[in-house]
Image 1 (spheres, rainbow, N blue to C red):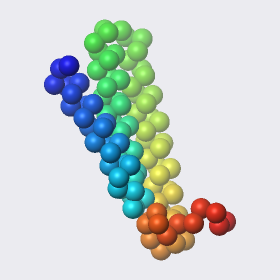
Image 2: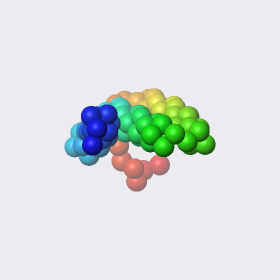
Image 3: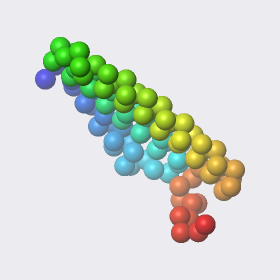
Amino acid sequence: MTPTHLAFSSAFLLALVGLTLHRTRLLSALICLEGMMLSLFIGLTLWALQLDATAHLSSPMFLLALSACEASTGLALLVATARTHGSDRLQSLNLLQC
């Protein structure tokens, strides 16, 4: 395993551990999801470059576009949650109420 593969694998695992252990605030969960998406983007780019396949070079850009859409949706949910509940703490949200 090259140092580059080790770096993006550890970045993904660190973001995954952060998502599973530190779920007190919505903003921290969104940042961990963004870290996971960016490490997947780097991994997919490295994979396409290692295979030297030009057909697979559009896949990382598609993933990056989906990541941007996910980030904007997450920030919209964060703003809506902060306005309705007054906080972004996940403990105070009751998902069973409308």
